[in-house]
Length: 166
Image 1 (cartoon, helix red, strand yellow):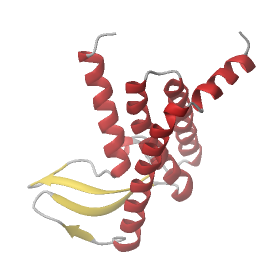
Image 2: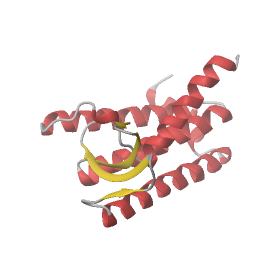
Image 3: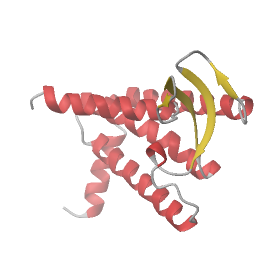
């Protein structure tokens, strides 16, 4: 089977009627992420807002990947990481296309969160993180709405792999 035949099969799979619900879900997640980040950027640039004893709103700009890993001032490394993230998203879209319905739900959640953060990397050259969970002086890594969906999707994927037999 040559590449063009495989590409046509993927294209047909991608535009199946059953995928419309997953695309709508992905658009909703990306929209929620975009709106939340826009509101925070407009209103909390240099301010920390204390919601309660456990949650702050504190805008930080993450130029790395999850948890600030691979943060660097090097444009080359930043661009390589961004390209790698984009490549992983494209690969996940391929996996989404050939997956069962339940797996499509999981992949659509992960892809939409990753796409939200990728768009920030392209637009802002960093990802705005703003949810600061803490207990006394212990602070968890600051994150955003897209990170919540990526984490949620990965947790569901892992739990599914442990408890659902093929």
